[in-house]
Structure formats: structure tokens, C-alpha cells
Image (cartoon, rainbow over all chains, first blue to last red; front, side, top):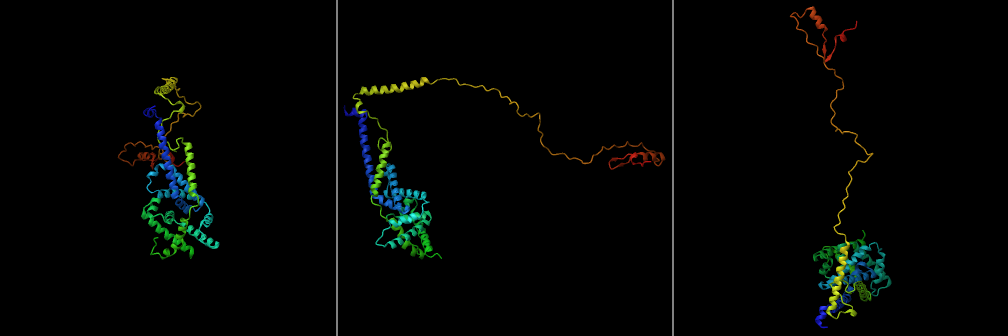
Length: 197
Length: 190
């Protein structure tokens, strides 16, 4: 049977399209694996800074990449993959945080004490440091939501104010003004905690 | 970090504690093997997806031509033609079968409704006519008798002081405030 007859019959086209499909799938897998290798740690840190729980943060990262898998067709249109992924995981953790509002704060203290770096501190010093950090995080939790979000994201050294604005879908000037307000508010809260009078 | 120069307490208290804490939390290392676990989760999701979608791509993006089974691959054009004719025959035959079984031009059934009859034992108006409520007319509390005017006396003679005329005048009923007071009623009883 000649090639033209095979094309006319149709099955040669099937074999070609299957090969193209397979190659495309392989390329998508490779791209996704590269994204996981490159950004999974950063996404975990973003998730942990909000959820403050290792297992929850890891779940959030997995969910973020599963969302990427579902929308992998639009992967080629994304300009900045890092900001795009942080935005996805940010939305996931905010949603989870909203749903888990009833969780007792003592869990946060225990988690923080477990994951903090020891840096040669004694057990007592480490416990005191963990308590202090937990107190600071409680003050951060008292901030209004908009200010808190900007403050938490600003702690990531790899995120500029432009990128924070892209993650939160606001302007850069809004990021700056919210950050300024957040710093003033948290300073007031910490001063009030030190000097209750 | 931007600090507020007009607020010394802000500049003094914040950088030492809050920022440091946030940086520590933001800089915590990811647990070991995170990438492997994420990759495994993606692989599992992809496999489940491909089990649902036979083409393995998750979403069927375009139409595809069905392939013949290898054992029945038509080697010549006439077999394809015969297969196409068989498909056309089956489809047309099925359509014809459905067409002939469906009853056509079925006249619509018209139900004549009986005239409506009033239900026996129901309420009736009994000829009652409703009269609208209007204003009540004014009523007089005391009964008033119609005034009877005495006939006019005959023209008196020029001498009005004669005894006969005086008698006639005495017999006439006096008129007091619209009430007719007769002579008998006014005369004292003897």
C-alpha cells in the first residue's frame, strides 16, 4: 500500500498525531518537573509563613502544583513563573487559613518551637526565643488583613514590592503605603505589650 | 526597610523584633524530600487523569479519526466502501424504522366541556340587593302637627266695637307660636 493511500485511509495521521501528543506530554512533564525543582522550596516558605504548620504548608504546595497541572495549557503564556506560582499558593493558603480559623493558637507555638533554628542556644533560650517569636506572630495576626498580607510577603527577601503588588493584584504605591501602616501598627502593638500602662 | 523618621518608637522597636521574626519564619528551610513528594503527587494525579481520559492528555483537545483494529485493517478501497455502505444502510434503516413506528397526522382530541351548573346546596343571594350606605338625613326630635289656619273672618262693619263682633272675635282660636289652641281647650271648665 502506498503512502498516499495510507494517508487517505487515515491511520497514518493517527500514528503521527499520537507521536506529537506523546512528545507534547513529555515536554509538559519536563517543564512541570523543572518548576517543582526550582520553586517548591520558595512556595513552601510562603505557605508556612501564613499557615505555620509543616504538613499544611506541604499540602498547600502540592495543591498549587496540581492546579498548575490542570492549567498546564496556559503555562506558555505565563511571563513570570515565580510570581505566578506564589500567587497560586498564596490564594490556597489564604483560603485554608480562613477555613481553619477555629484552630487553637497553642498549635502554632508548638510548631514554631519545633522548626526554629537552634543556633547553639540552650533549651531554655530556645524556648524563650520561640515564645518571643510566637508573641510577635500573634501581634502580626492582630493587624488588619491587608496590612498583614503585605508585611508577611515583604519578609521574603526575594520578593520586590513590584512582585508583591503582582501577587496581591494591587499597585506598587498601595504596597508601600500598606507596609508603612503595618509597621507603625505592629510597633504600637509591641510597645503596648512591653509597657501596658 | 523604610522606617518612619517622625515616629521614633516605630523605628526603635520594629526592626529588632518583628522584622527579625518574620524573616526567620520566611527563611525556614523546606523539609527534605519535598520536591520528590510533590512530583509523586503530580504523577499520581496524572495517572488518575489518564485513566479517566483514554487519550492520556487529560482534556480531549481535538477530534480524532478512529483506527481500524489491526486484524480487520481494510487492505483495499472496496472494503472501505462496503463498510461505509453498511453503516449508511444501518443508520438509514434505523431511521426508517423509527419513522414508520411514529403515528402521524393524529387528530387532536377535543374534549367538549359540559356547561357549568351551579353547585346544589350552595349559597344564594335570596334577592338581596345591597344598598350603599349614605348619610342619614336630619331628624326632628319633637313631633310637629301641621298648622291649620282659621278661615279669614268676614269683612267687619265699620263699627268694630259692636257686641256681635266682639263675640265673634272671642270665639276665634288664638294662634300661639304656630300651635293651634282651640277655644274649648283654653276656656276654663265650668
